[in-house]
Amino acid sequence: SGLTRKYMLIKNKKKILFDKSLYSIRGICYFFYKEFTRPFASNSGQIMLEALVALSVILIGILGIFALTSRSLSLNTVAGSQYIAANLAAEGIELVKNIVDGNMMQGRAFNILLPGDYQVDYSSKELSPWYSPGNELNFNPDTGLYGYSGGEPTTYKRKINIAYDGAEIMKVTSAVNWTTRDNASFEINAEDY
Image 1: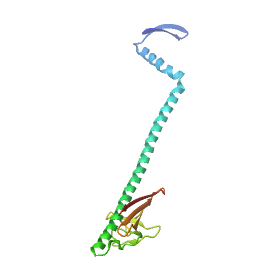
Image 2: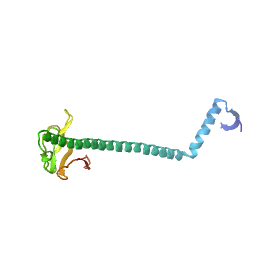
Image 3: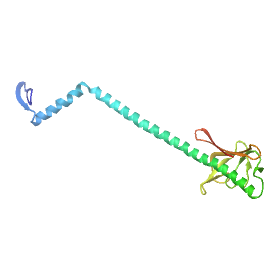
Image 4: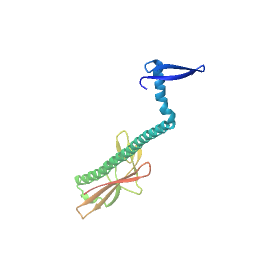
């Protein structure tokens, strides 16, 4: 015991006793050999098991991050679609207001529009009848506007409903519906009086 130990070596069938100091190179090598091979010899499968558990924990963490990122991107797409649809619904209301204001400026009554379902785009001077299932709006990347002529087709459909609540109150409802790539349907409604 202590820093110096006595060891017996058998060489050429003779016992040779020699002093192996911890400070000698041979002593240091022997010390590290004994200290670091002893745990591996008795627990050789335990290290493999610990490595597999650590790898599993890391893998679960990485998969969780990927799932969270994928879900975040999916929700970002839905939020962007809702933003576009809300603006298209508001645009539908504004276009009807423009047509009503144009009628008033020409000396016509505001309520000459018949109750019913219509479609309208930014270039329309009057409302067009809406037929089920409705026309899809196209997006023109040059102008950045949505309309029924020209541009790339989208999944957005806008239906304008005009109804009267008495003779003096016109209710305008603009409904925009669309479908996503996984065939989920959404609808946004805006109304004004």
